[in-house]
Image (tube, rainbow, N blue to C red; front, side):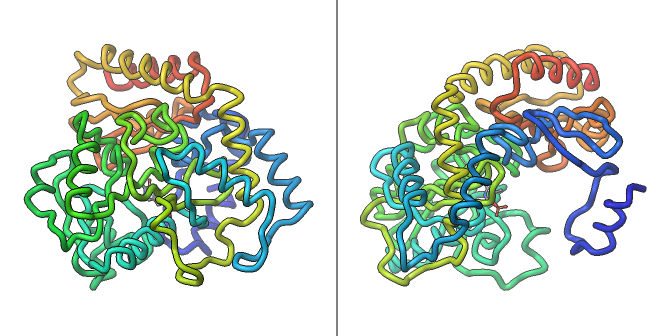
Length: 387
Ligand SMILES: *Cc1c(COP(=O)(O)O)cnc(C)c1O
């Protein structure tokens, strides 16, 4: 066994398993292991590396910032890079969402939204969704659905109800003026790349408006161009009260954001984080937004995403092993009629890295800059192994 795997298994927390290789480096959509094998990374390091591995612009931005000023204390001093990042992020956020609390991760963005929902509404009840994934800290975990994630840590935060996803009647039946917030992913990621019916987000928005309930959209996986819009709720022109972002936001640098409407903003000292909004993260995030605009990444993802989804649907329609292909942009799920692990291993043997979502779904979250030709080759290989 590789020595780095051995060391990780010896000293790691035990929470993570490892595949039989150690990754040494990467470039664009590729990574390579210590034996010099190159892999096409269709998981983008679990939906993080949007602009490719070792993106030159992002790498330069982080290193320049590290050499200028790595950290500027929150609550005391302003800084140009942080100010500009907040401004640019407000500009790409839908509607009037123009206040941002910066975090270091997705779960912290959800945690901030959770606290804000309680404080702003004075209510405690929260509606979440079956198959939802919102992170692992105690608050976010309480909103997450999977029992095996939750069970060892009970009691979690009370007053949270998980309802069937994509069914407006389910919310209609339960929501009232005691509900602080409805939280959902615009396409469920970890839950299985589940795309709700067209118009669902608009209907949830209306229900929330009626009951003065906050609508929190977790765009940690779907946001920053993953589905071909800056945020997935843009496809329905829905403006939530709060958007949570992370994953691709920093181009690989850990940064997250809770983006909210003006009137929701915190009063002084009501929330905080030492590293949240650290300057290397802000500089990376700023560079991600600029890079995406300069290179028309959203348009590429929209167009190419449509093509690969329809190719995949067509090429798998007669395959017994495939139940359904679904998704949007560069977020694609292939649901099988059987466990997915052997197929992920087979793809791995063919130098393609893909993810699972649940037991039976292949999850593809390629870097947004993956060339069409590479995607086509990967699709051919996927179809071949599913025959
Ligand atoms: C990954 C993810 C999270 C958690 O983000 P972390 O950075 O791992 O804390 C929350 N919600 C969704 C939808 C995610 O995909």
